[in-house]
Image 1 (tube, rainbow, N blue to C red):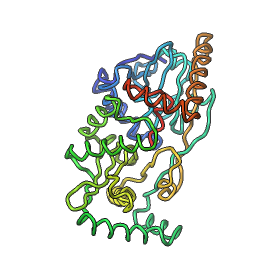
Image 2: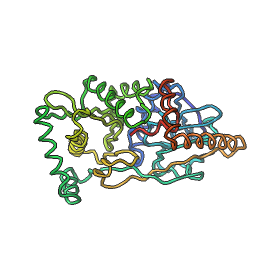
Image 3: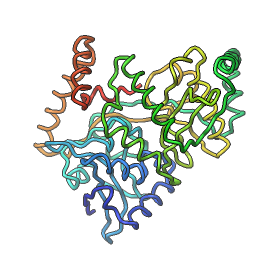
Image 4: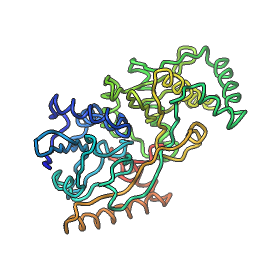
Length: 365
């Protein structure tokens, strides 16, 4: 099997068509984070973004592997810290060797934290199981609403009361599932930045490339990946918003936020339910809430999608050295993340430098 490496923007039209066909053939690959559109958007803002292209003996493409190349042969997922579904996009029945793939991409080690199912060759190294809370909408919104009502009789009733309170305070509510106006997107990023700082987390939008990627995706319109901005307005004013990638099958929760002035009215939860209702009406089967333990995800989820975290190496002596170096770096990050004083110092330092500490950057909230 032949492996070549290209920048996402260098892929040909034939490559993009082959990639999309592979996604369509496997439900586990139909996440928008695995789309060529997401890779190309990331490539425009991340100079380290690459795609490994696998070809068979007949030189036909049978796999695409998006990643980022770090110093000393370390590989990470494309759009590191923000990509919520990872793996090799491959043709049905394709067999590959992880060490051979990494060597062909010039990598000694590849780390992942959202590995999708069906990626067995990547699971021979250190692997931990994880899950991503999800709302199953395959039976329609009414079935989902009935499930919420059966689980907690007061949940929806309480939200209806908050909805009426929000209308009394701010005016008539209006929901836009696919808002094209960029102004509410800028407001959403300001709200999210304030939320990060309030929770002592890394402000993702302090990194220019993150905001640039969001703006790039907002103009992306494709079956496999559309940058979807959903907004809840009250009296003509945005009070909650969400931005994330969406495919025909999967809507991904990525950057939700709301105007803190209306926090007691739960505008974020009201927005999530409206998004779920409209997604179901459009035939979207899953609303992936994203990995992480948060109250609103527990309240909304119907189950969890399996994910894997871990690393895999090329199996060479230099890969073992790179693994040792990575372990030392991870140990340092864990020590910083677990110490309030050190964490605060690191966050302030990284925010000032405009580049957050890698391990802490994943704590998006």
